[in-house]
Amino acid sequence: MPPIDEFTSYLRLELNRSPLTVEAYHRDICQFADWITCFNPDRFAPSDITLNDIRTWMASLARNGVSPRSIRRKTQSLRAFFRFLHKRGDISTNPTTDISLPRLRKDLPDVVRAEEVEGILRLQDMETEAKPDDEDALRDNLIVDILYSLGIRRAELIAISDPDIDFFSSEIKITGKRSKQRIVPVPPPLLDKIKAWQQLRDRLWPDLPQPRPLFVVKGKRISPERVYRTVNKELQPTSARRKSPHALRHSFATAMLNEGAEINSVKEFLGHSSLATTQIYTHVSFSEMKKAYFSAHPRAKSGMESRTSPACAHQVRANLHPDEEKNDPN
Image (cartoon, helix red, strand yellow):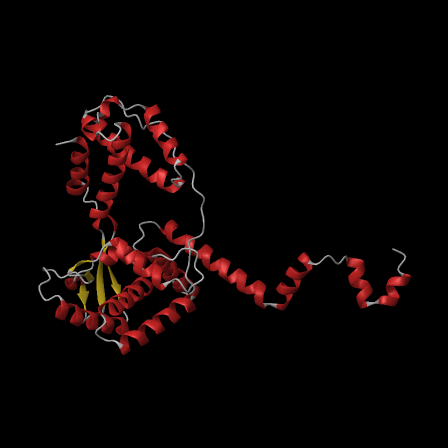
């Protein structure tokens, strides 16, 4: 078995990584193998790879416009691959040991404003009420509602199957990163939407394999690309910079914290392993609070206006007390 396939088998069988994670590692390493062999991957020899080879590859990615975040992820995939080979004794040295990863800006997450999402869902609800047998409309409405109402990841949404949904307890079992599972509560209106969608899905696709995937397109489990296109299309009217499934996850967390939810509860909802990951949303909430303050409070607004006004202190005093200004010795 080629070393790349051995590594992906190790990720899948021994480390129990999710299929999407394994696919991402495999894609990154194969991309490097194609580059280093001029698209002759059968000639790929990991023992011949040097630190300079990897640095040159990283530089070529940057020249081709690949983002620092993507370069960082691809390099981390190579690190894991060569660490695996070195640990097994397949190579004598690990060429990635001294690689420096690109620094990333710590941008605040993109958030779709709550009132904008609520408006989209209201319009979708009206459309599905008018056309209850419209497969695309019902499915798209449910996708946006689940992502926003539960704050789950795109891969987690795709992985939901019928047995994961407990209508009696109003809960869904979510399978997250590294196959870690968590239970999240589901509001009754959303459960009603899920039931309506399942009934339509089963009429249209009665021969789905067991366990039945919740979301299907043309009788097959929905793809990550289709989920992204659906959300991107529905979020077009909003002011969000990035109109993606993850933006709805950010919106969920921000809305929860803005309404007073305890941060540890939000952490469990999101499936974060570290509280530090969840804390970034407190910064988003504070920035929203700061924006609201400076746009609403009279003292804050006047302070902002004085910063941009060219008026000097003596001009302000002159406007208030013109006679005193004339006699002011200073």
